[in-house]
Image 1 (cartoon, rainbow, N blue to C red):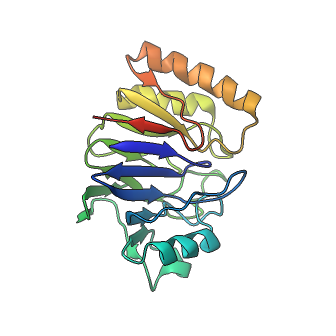
Image 2: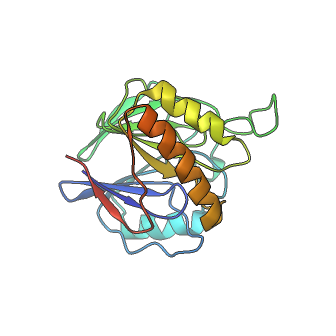
Length: 210
């Protein structure tokens, strides 16, 4: 499997020439042309994860791609499959297992929207904007590093609890370069203590996983 990092929490997973894309957005960069998608997963409705104009272009280029999102995503209710925690499905060459339910609290005591995590082929997990753990621990997890809803210590605790072996930073567009360096140093420290590898991937960089 190949994993390519794009802006913020956007990841492209590729296997056997086919692709699966998480949370396609455009902030400081434009997405390259992608035409091999079997699935697009929108973890939740916030604008730093779901940009309708970007998704519409991807749908035009990938009419075969199946879209998965949360039950409160009214904008996609006629074109997407609702993903609920506990659901399992196969799409193209990928096996998906969904988990979790709610976005992490931004305002204490309030859940502002739904959120869905996804375990792909038992190898890669993306919890979206939550600290929900996948139903079984994969080799690789995408871990959020900067958001209104988190403290870095929470991410570090999440990773300690997970026991995962490779960590890729996600949700990082909110930071400056300096801020991401601070996050990288702290998360790298807890990964080393936990026997895990912290793998920083920059925009467009590809990581290969056997």
